[in-house]
Length: 312
Ligand code: NDP
Image (cartoon, rainbow, N blue to C red):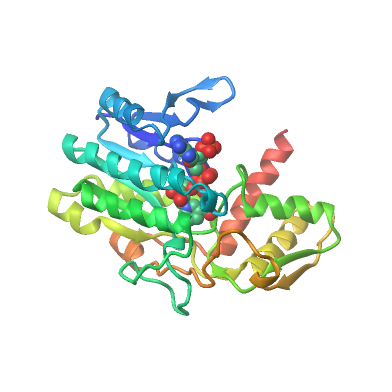
């Protein structure tokens, strides 16, 4: 089998995909800096550099391109709109064009932030999008560019991603809970916290079913799918669960209280959707998946963290 090229192999999802995709075939990892970790080289692919990106694809001629790279800094994107659109939209279109011309297929990730957040039932893939900021707008443009490229593709829209490594809400809450007497966290945004490991494992299971399909069936099963953990909560409820479970597992010395505040009391550069819960029916039915509840995902990541800390 020709190789799989994994872009963004050192992000939260990319890191987990390195392990999850290994059984599917030879994996070529690429990062912006050309390193998986200090001193561990891999291919270099800066999505802001189109010539380098297509040169990498031409060199490896992959059968499957998995794009886990993105400009994910939601607030910074407001001040870096050109770069965010270059990385999250134009580069995705170029990946799709290369794939369409060379008979490769593409797995790409997108976000709940393509929605406006004024719903009160989970969003379906066909619901109208209305991104509130540059990040969501650029990710939506990336979805559209990939669809327009004509490449066979899957777009997995996920949400509230976290892991035992990287920069994320869980690690911030654990740090702050150890430092402060009380945490204040917004309680008027609802979503489904989703570990990168759950996304990676589901991605591998989806690919194992999707890739062998005949062309027409593969196209019918492709396009956009929503992929998160089940259920939903506010950031405040997520923080309270993180603190309680981490304390119970010995990762925190005490169970720091988590007080609810409103988004108005915690202004950010970019507005966030108040409701970004995604309906999972299509992905679960198409690929025979049963996604775990967000609470089970949290225990998985905390167990990972406890294991890492014990080993270090
Ligand atoms: P991360 O921010 O952890 O990883 C993104 C990776 O993309 C980083 O390794 C980053 O590298 C890399 N990257 C950024 N710019 C470039 C560039 N110009 N060229 C090459 N690589 C680049 O994000 P996640 O793993 O959490 O996100 C994976 C996918 O899921 C993305 O498509 C994201 O939009 C989507 N998603 C994420 C959510 C979240 O809460 N994080 C929520 C919903 C969807 P570097 O470290 O060098 O910047």
